Length: 263
Ligand code: SAH
Image 1 (cartoon, rainbow, N blue to C red):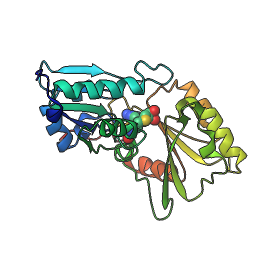
Image 2 (image 1 turned 90 degrees about the vertical axis):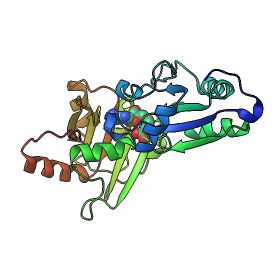
Image 3 (image 1 turned 60 degrees about the vertical axis):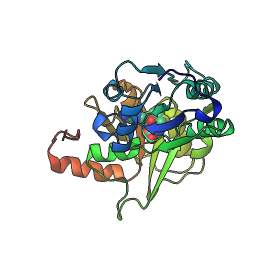
Image 4 (image 1 turned 45 degrees about the vertical axis):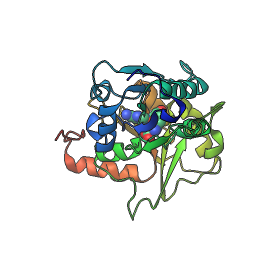
């Protein structure tokens, strides 16, 4: 759809969650919108199989931002989205997981609304939920964890140490997004805050994909485990007694495959 719209006929932007990786974890609503899309702006963590559901010959624009390598700055993305609504009816901004969780959707919604552009957020399955199902183990359990904390390991200007200072890990599950590159400082902060070195941890790379890798350890050992196994991004970190429960479940399953079966 390339005809230029008048101001009253601007396109609408859908900020859509693509889920954690497994294409089958895309929501039906996301699938419907992707099939209608006239242009799609997508990130690094969106699987090619998900992009494959879009109609042929529409524009697919990569606007990824790998940590440290800002191939496309947020302001540029905001401008590209605004510009696209002059030329297209259905503009999709496709993000990994759920757009509302560490997805910078706030910046985009604000910029669109300030320009008078209609937009809608379409929820996705966040990595934390995807990884729980993939591991076959919950994030909460009445005997292990009654609270969940979603934290970012990273902030605009580096490691997000603030969130880990004085953080007590007992009785909760702590999920750290974007934490792999800050694992050392995070672990030190948690130990300095009085948490036992035995506090359980897991690091999961490529959660929900066939290439998923899971490593477990504790505050003292996890850094060397991650280093020895050359764990790469994307990876999510889970801290708390729930990791012990996962290990129990895993031993009962006798090593059955953890990846969700395709329907
Ligand atoms: N909006 C996303 C999170 C974006 S922040 C969501 O709801 O899941 C990006 C971080 O998400 C990565 O650094 C990593 O910590 C995590 N992540 C995304 N996909 C992942 C995957 N398949 N496996 C492990 N971690 C993943």
